[in-house]
Image (tube, rainbow, N blue to C red; front, side, top):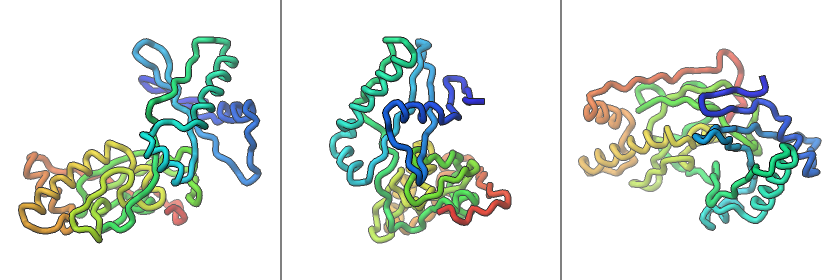
Length: 258
C-alpha cells in the first residue's frame, strides 16, 4: 500500500509526492543520489488534516544560528512554506489549504557531547544496547534519519529494541555534569533513536536519582553507576525492572552501521 494508517492519521510510504514537488519547484536531482522523505498526516479533532512533511537540511553552524534566534524559521523556510501552500492549493483546487508558519521549529540534532563515561553507538543499539546488569530500562523506536545524514548509512534497518543506562549522559571530564536528551553521548546513528523524548524522560529520572545518591554518599555524579540507580528505583517504587533489549540483526551483517 502507499500509506500506513493509524488511529489518528496516516504515514506515507511513497516518495512520489516529494518528487512531484521537487519537479514543480525545478529543484535539481543529483546524479550522486538524493533523499526524498515520506510525510505524516494527522487527523485533528475537528476532522481537518495536518500535514507534517517539510524538512530543511542545514549545516550545524546554520542550525546554531536558528537556535540562537529562538528556533524561529528563517527567511528561506518561510518562502518555501509559502510556495508549498500555493502548490497544494493548485493541486487540490481548494483555497482553504493553509501552511501555517510555526513560531518555533523542531531541530532534530545539532551537537553531541563527546567525552562521556560510556558512549552509546548505533551498532550497540541494534544489538540490544547496554548489558542487562548495566541498564535501567529498555526502549524501541525506528532509526529515524529523515533528510539523511552525510557520512552515515541510510540502509533500511530493523526496529531496535535496546537497553540503556545513564553512562552515556555522564561527562567523564567534568565530575558533576550530565547531558540528557539528543545531545547525550550518542555515536553515529544512535542519536536518531536517542533523541526521542520518551527515553529522555526516563533516563533523566535515572540521572536525578543518581544525583541524589551522589549527594548522599558525598561523591561525584559521574562515579554513580546504572546498577546503583536501578536498585534505588526498585526500592523506591517496589517494582522490578523488566528489560527487553535484544539483538535484532538476525544474522545480517550491519558492521558498517556506526
